[in-house]
Amino acid sequence: MGILVPITNLVVFEGAWDVLKHVWSSYLNRVFTVGQIKISVVSLVTGLIILVIALTLARSSSSLIERRLARRQHIDTGLRYTIARLIKYAVTIVGVLVALHQAFNLDLTSIAVIFTALSVGIGFGLQYIAADIASGFILLFERPIRVGDRITIGEDEGDVHSINLRTTTVYTNNRIAIIVPNSKLVSQRVINWSYGDPRARIAIPVSVADDCDVNRVTDTLVEAARGVDNVLETPEPNVQFLEFGNAALHFRLLVWSNAPRRHFQIRSDINFRIARLFAERGIKTPTPKQELLVRSVDHDHFEGDLLPSDPRRDPRHPDFEPDKSTTDPRR
Image 1 (tube, helix red, strand yellow):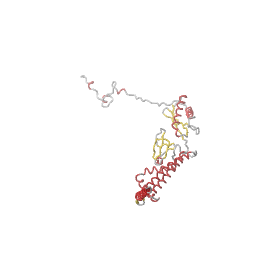
Image 2 (tube, rainbow, N blue to C red):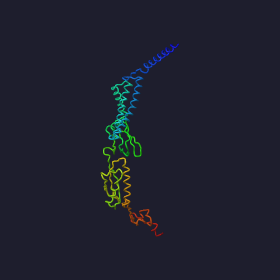
Image 3 (cartoon, one colour):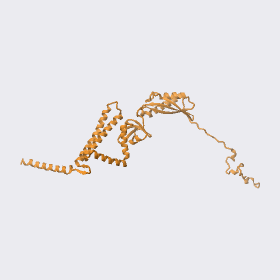
Image 4 (cartoon, rainbow, N blue to C red):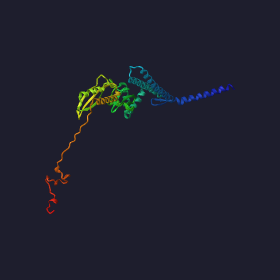
């Protein structure tokens, strides 16, 4: 009796094993051929697992590389971001190719055919997305715009937060996120305040009354610009006398700064100092003068307080007709 139990278990195990082998060979590992594509349940699951591992590895390797590069102070933030993104895209592309090969038994020639077919579809319906993706690679390789740069797009100005595969995220001073397609950053006019030399000149227009002393106004404006945070001492602040206006003299104060993100605050600080110094030194801002032109009226046109309702009642009119009600002698 004790010997029969192991024999029974062995028979059951062998039966289950035969069933598993049958399921494996007949269903799970059965190859279906469609053209040059060979697919099975096992290969499809294996390819999916490889894809998940590749995406996870791409994300973790990108973060690891970025943390390692952050320790090197001579590498700026934009370059670190570009290197990490390129590594992430490279690992992802390799993982996708390996997953396609494992799942569908495709070689490089077959993959090239598939991408050629996809490119035709892209050319007809997805050309804008393709342009954004190509522009994203241009931004990463050419680096005209980098993460952390201060840029102006139309009427919007902000800092570049991230450059993704299709779009770029820009945060304004109000912490409003602007999602910009990459193709617009490549094809349209964009001002990059941080590109190359970060120094930029700030122009502040100022108008004073026309009876103010020009030299005194110039010295006051220069003094107002000195000592303000983020204003460079070299080049020195400069004042330009622009023109004579309507009861006003128009000047422009020019200062330099290497802090693009602080331009609005710099302009505000200087304006506060100008207002205070003008009040202390008696320099007045212009008050526009308006002239009122009064035309005289010939009183001969009036009869009493009112003009005649009929021009022919005017004795100077060529068709003058006297009022018979006043000239008839019988009345």
